[in-house]
Every structure is written in C-alpha cells, then in structure tokens.
Length: 330
Image (cartoon, rainbow, N blue to C red):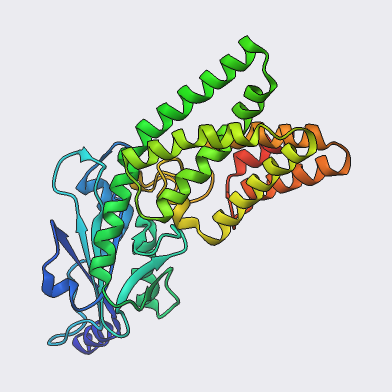
C-alpha cells in the first residue's frame, strides 16, 4: 500500500532541477529553451546566495518515477564556491514539452535575461500545472542571441563609469560657464544637455554599439545638440524639452531594452533594476521638466507635470515610485 502511494506521488511529479557549476554542456543547451540570469545583487555573489534565492532545493535531482525521466528538466548554472565579483550571467535551460527558443520574463523586459526569483517561481508553477512567470519565445538561434546579449550587457557595464563621469563633468562645466558669463544660451544648454546625452546614449544602445568609447562619444555629442537647442527661446525651447521627456517615455514603453542596455540607464548586470528610471536618470530629467513647466505656465505647466509623473512613475514606463514623489513635489 505504501509502495503504491509512493509510486503515485512520484508519477505526479513533473519537474526536476539539475544544478550545474560552470558552463552547461552543448547537448543540454541544444535541446531546450535558453536564458541567462544574474545570480545576486551588489558587487559580489556566491553559490550559497544563489541557491538560497533560487529556492529550488526540493526539486534538485529528484525522480518522477522509477524508470522514467521528468517531463520537464530545468538546468541551472550557479557560481563556484566562495565569493566572487558579480560581473557574469549564468545559464538556464528548460527542456521538455514546448520549451524551445529564448526564455523571456516580464520582470526584466530584456529577452533572454531572467530575474533569479522567476526561476524558482517557474519551477513551482510548472510543478502545479500553472502559468509560469517565464515563457519561451521561438527564435532561430537562441544561443547566438544570448551570446550577443551577454556582450551588450558587459559593454554597458564597462561604459557606465566613463559615461557618467563625462556627463557630470560636462554638465558642471556648462553650468559654471553660464554662471560666470551670464550667457542665457549656456544656461539653456546646461538644462538641455542631460536630456540630449540620454537620448544619444539610448540610440547607441539601440544600434547594439554600446561600449565605453561609443557611449562616451554619444554623451559628448550631446553638447552641440544641446547648444543648438539652446538657440531657441521661450515657448519653443520649453516645448522641445517637453517633447524630449515625452519621447523618453515612448522609449521606456516601446523600446525598454535599449534603455536598459544603455551606459546611462538601469544596471541589469548587478541584479538590481532591470528597466525603467534610476535615481540618476530621475535627476537628469528633473531640471528640463521644471524649466519647461516654468516657461509654459498655466494649464501647460500642469500638462508638463502630468507628463513627467507618467514617464517617471507608471509601471509601463519608468516604474520609479520614489521618482514619482520627487516629481510630484517639484
């Protein structure tokens, strides 16, 4: 009787997880849906931390029957023992049923890149026969797409430091020159520059050319663009600023991946924010929004305020609750 009950329980199981240290064998990757995930948050990760956050211990290497394999197999690569720099992504492969192509997750909005929490959630949902948070998107060559994505994430990570430093230095220089010379063109250029640099950096990311040199060049190219816009005065200048904020909102809603993989943007490589508006971007957008609202005034000020709050705060765009409060107060 007990044997029959145990057999029935084993047959009801649907998922097994196999933990891999290091790269997964090509034979495993060739037969399923592929993805990458970030093993931890912050500067360092470890095998223990990754396993704890995955929360899949009860599914590891279990059997679904005496002589049969489980219908669904999830292969998860984890870091080696000991703390290590959080600078690489780890493989995830789901095999079985209709699992083919590229793994996608709404939590990251970057096709192929998964949040670690969604892996455990997917395993449990598949076991219960429910809709999992991770899905498979058919694609011709998922391995090549993941390799390209991994390179782009590394490029964005390396570009972040130089791009941020050049952006800050140029902004301080423009603001200082405006104060010293009392030139209105320089003041308007200083306000428009962060918005121009942000858009140019996203354009570079959309072209999949993100890297320290190309992103820094895009930031520097924002100077002539901003000074060109600064030739406008009054309402035309304010409307251009408002249009720049609106365009950024459209990018967040329709091309989130380009923003995420930009050197000036979220930091998906450290497992924190995968998309939307960071504190840095929020700060860069605040001055243009305030300037546009102050110049336009009246009901148009209210329109600019509403536009900015929507871009920064709604889940479909910036998804930044703190930024929403800051912009509402400002």
